[in-house]
Length: 388
Image 1 (cartoon, helix red, strand yellow):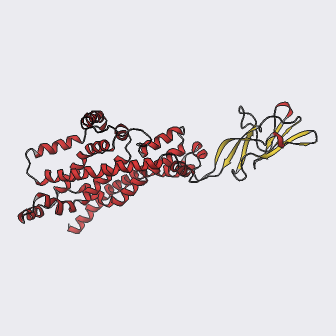
Image 2 (cartoon, rainbow, N blue to C red):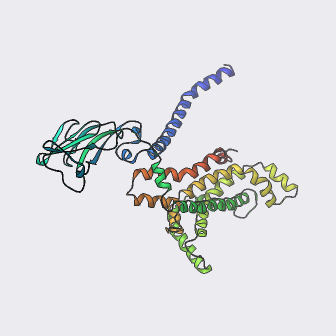
Image 3 (cartoon, helix red, strand yellow):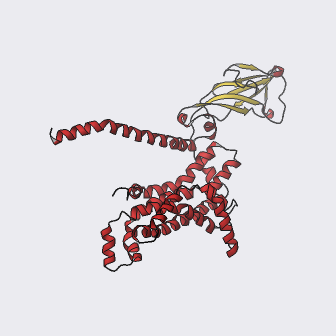
């Protein structure tokens, strides 16, 4: 059997597995994309439609149970022996048609459009499919406001920027955005600088107990944040009290995020730096370069993909963090980060879905920009050093 034939058979045998892999990847992409797409569509929908129908119905009309009031009794007119109130239930063009109506909350959909509903004391109510109503009464209408009319209407899909406008114009959102940047940028840069030096030392410098240090770094990857958060806070408070540093400061949250991010940073950067060609390092040492010069002039420029990979992880984690920010920075009006502000906004509005969906995309706008600007380095930085 020729080599070309064997290659063709091997390719044929691998094709079912290739199909399975491609289908699996496609399934994962769909599972991750659909919820995000639904959240994005929902953030532009009208809040009343969002409350009664799913995002997959965003392009179709939906039925909504609504309540309107007739004109004020002062606008009644007398026609023959009866008094009339006429008008529209809702704005003209706000719905496709009325499919049912009623005059009491006990039976809000008991009558079809165009039929006459008998009310108390001889009064009647008629609502047409286009929303026009006529209410009659043998005696004058009384009261300080119009009568209630319950109706079910088919509403066309409505999209607007009102949800984003409500979120972005809420009080304190700008200060919280600045607070998040103040926390995230240093909390991303500091661990990168420390981890880069540590990764070079663990890769190319002869240190006593180097293998033990590497094992400790790997072990710290599995330490839960929640378990170490309170002990770390107590330690920071004790040290801060000794040096006269306040508890709720940016320095505290920078150090906390640095401590939680260092194990992963050292692990990723060491895998990358240790995979660099040994000949480059040895040639630099032969030429008389110190370890610091090798690190600054050779290793650091070559390690940019790994640095970018960790920057993405650290930035996303710190930007979306709420627990560490709440513990180390507090929940004051001047210290609240963006995630905390959006949580407060959602709570003050009774858990409105339109606020939740718009807030989600407001909070991920900056991380998305960071990810797409550095994503070409992500896979290269993660996989470097995995194959020798």
